[in-house]
Image (cartoon, rainbow, N blue to C red):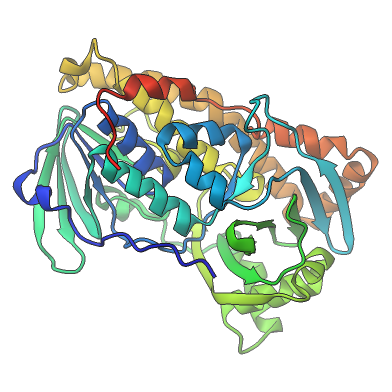
Length: 432
């Protein structure tokens, strides 16, 4: 079982004397921590607010495509990632029932980083947060956002400590939303959908030790009412994750009466997917299943929203293509590259200037990521329906290269950000 070092779960001491910053970043996942690192290195004063104590397990993907590895090195955690992450992922498998199709994953053009790897979120998040703190960002953790007021040029973010209930108001000309897709900001909570639907998708994830999954293979699972995947990550741990429709989850729980939801999902996967049975035949689950949802894939960037959004706060693809980490890291680089412009730094409080930055960033975001969302949605709908999964398996069996091509279309070897641009963000040495 993974046991990374716990980071301090408190507000950095200097915050007690400071409440005004150049930027407030809400959420310290990969996108939020990456943005804090880049802005702090550029000389910005940054407050990074995170409501969870680290390390924390999370129902999110652990696969990091090859296109992101140069970004991790640019952020300063490349050596730790190389030493800790799971084996190189060189093949993809599509599994449906008793059938399986195997194909090569495309190799990236980078001479040193040609293949993706997997790293547990509890480890990755902790590494990135430590770099943000070392870069000079002020970390408030575990603190929650209670309200957001003001607007571009003069944001007022009301925060409260989880453990002591101390509170303060942070002021900054720039506010960046980097929270999870089901962790809505206070201003959006009244608009959240309350109606239940049979098509709601819930995410589940568990770690296993002693599994027999080939470390170089990335299986994608297609089953009635859902989809999923497996991967070997750090310390030889195998992660099994899936998304399942509410109606299929209800059926699985009836079929395994008395089991918890995650255990019922595990029983269903073992029963319905030969690849899962084979991989887990000698495995032991480490800890309980994690669950979250309903997930809500789609684009959340809006022309009338003054908050700058990155990661899942900007948009979320069906996790069947495993591009969540790419969109998180790359969107942070894309936004910061536009914010960190020495010629315009003094103009940050200007509303029109921020709107121009937001417009250019949103256009780039849609150009780079909207096609991935459409591909992921189409793939997910086929995988979840027997009438779609059967012809998909037949086509993949006849033409395995389709899976390779699909991985390329999904962004596995394309980076929307330029990692070399990170050097331009550095105006002073990074501590630690």
